[in-house]
Structures are given as C-alpha cells and as structure tokens.
Picture 1 (cartoon, rainbow, N blue to C red):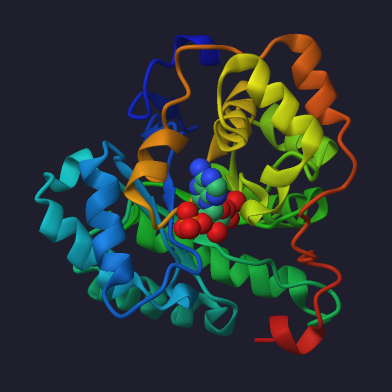
Picture 2: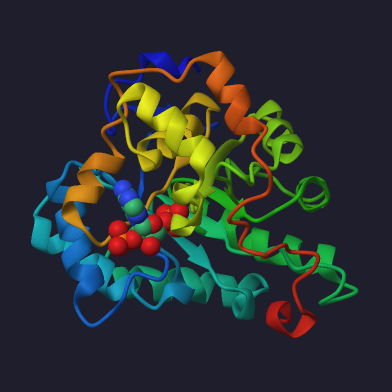
Length: 293
Ligand code: A2P
C-alpha cells in the first residue's frame, strides 16, 4: 500500500483477510500495573488511538480492558491485539489461553491474536509440531469468531515456512523488534513479500535510540522529535509502529507524524545507522528454559 495516503493514526492497513487495522497502535509492554496501564489506555484512546497492543505475559490484560471501558469508545471502533504465551503451547491449552485472555480483557473477541514466540529447536526437538499444534488452536478460535485475525511475533522465515506446512489459515501479521539501529531488513522484506503485515515492537528503541546524534540531526531538519522520526520511519517502511509512553503529551506527539515525509536520502541514512538499542531478544538464541513448554 501507499503509505502517503495515510493521513492520521486511525487510517488503516488492510490484513490478508480484509480486516482493517489502524496504522499506529499503542503498546503496553512494561507499562506499570496498579492502575497505570488502565489510566494510560484510557488516555491513549482519548488522544485518538484506536489500536491497543497487549499480551497475556504483560499481566495487564485486565487493566487494558478496564481502560477501554473507562474511555467509552464503542467496541467495534477499537482494534485490540493480545498474545499467546509460551507456556500455553498445544491445541487444547491454546484454546483455553484464548478464553483466559478474553475473560481478562472483558471482551467477546480479540481483533488480533499472536503467537508471542516460536517454539525453537533449542527448546524442543518437536518444535515444528509444537508450533503447528498451537496454530491449530489459533485456527479453531479464529473460525469460531473469537479472533478476527491471527498472526505471530518474533518469527523468522524458517519458523513461518514450517508453520505453512500444516496451516489452513496463514499468519496475517508478524510483530518484530524494529527501530532505527535494528531493522532486520531481510526478515521484514521477506514477510512483506508474503503478504504479511509487519508490526514494530519498541519502535523507539525503548528510548535508547532517541539520544543518537545522527537521528537527532535528521529530526531537527524536519522540526520533529527523534521519536516522531522513528514512528514515521516505520510507516514509510510499511511497518505498523506500536510506540509506548505513559505520558499523555508524548502519546499524542508520537502519533502526530502525518504532515511530512522523510526524504529518501534520510531514510537511507537511518537504514545505515549502526546497531543501536537492540533488546538482545532473538528466538533462536534465547535460553531453552525461557522458551520451553
Ligand atoms: P515514557 O513512558 O516516560 O514516555 P518503545 O516504544 O520503543 O519501547 O519506547 C518506550 C520508551 O520510550 C518508554 O520508556 C517511554 O517513556 C519512552 N518514550 C516514549 N515516547 C517518547 C518521546 N516522545 N520522547 C522520549 N521518550 C519517549
């Protein structure tokens, strides 16, 4: 799609099954509990966000649900993503995990459900089978109308190819770490060429990237903040950014990225930044016990 037709954070990308997904989402990873996530989700909706991203493992699905209700935005106007955790792999457990997340969120359906991490060879000799069985649960819940779209997160090409062996419904989304200084270009381009929407977790590099001098100089040239350049950069790559902030002014500013374009030469300069702000999380390198079933 031509990203230059996007005019605000509610304008959508379209998934392979035709479902529309607002082009910037509000991320809630590491957002504190004890009422903070609830407040932030309401404030994000007040600021105009219509796409909220959470996960079972964040432990805040209940607060996300409360924030949605506080904001009073009609259900069908908000796109809610949550994610399946690695301890719930397998067909039956996956079906239960869907119900648990929906119950915590207080919703009848999720707009998008993602496999949070692939099972990998280091964790199990049966990794392909484990992912396939988990995916069968996703397909079942999708067909039952509990999930409007299904996808994965942190999958590399080999994990997707293995899943395709048995999948009836192909993953529509892959959510990856993506920000200036860590853009995984081959993986992103391959996923996009297969018709998957790539989403960016930590599109601001969890704050570290924002201090980079080269990025700050590009931002100054456009009269924008480094955070706005990060968000716009993702969009211009056709990648859906999920920025996080607990500060309402930053929430609004991070989505105010539509009145300008980053020139090709500056896109290339950002592409060429050295590795910066990488989380260190890679599915194949993660310790086996962290990813075991
Ligand atoms: P805060 O919640 O205090 O705003 P990412 O989405 O890449 O993981 O980055 C999230 C981090 O970036 C959070 O620590 C957040 O802190 C910070 N952050 C978010 N927006 C901005 C901004 N506009 N300027 C500076 N830091 C920001």
